[in-house]
Length: 65
Image 1 (cartoon, rainbow, N blue to C red):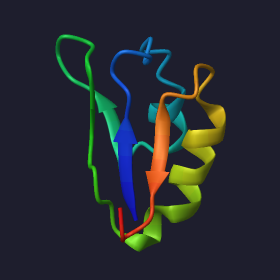
Image 2 (tube, helix red, strand yellow; image 1 turned 30 degrees about the vertical axis):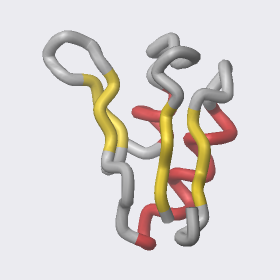
Image 3 (tube, rainbow, N blue to C red; image 1 turned 90 degrees about the vertical axis):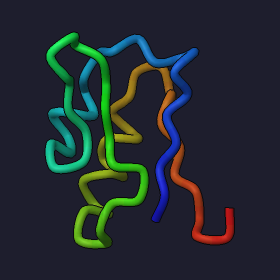
């Protein structure tokens, strides 16, 4: 599983941080940082983060992308 966040679209609502805190977090400057290829054990949380993003800035990429 790979993740891509469109930083032009992301408005730092941080819903992904609440949905998948092991993958997404805010740094000291309140900028979103994330693990682009999280472990498979985070699949459910990441899918929840994708659906929770109010601006649809997060995309799941298949392994072939």
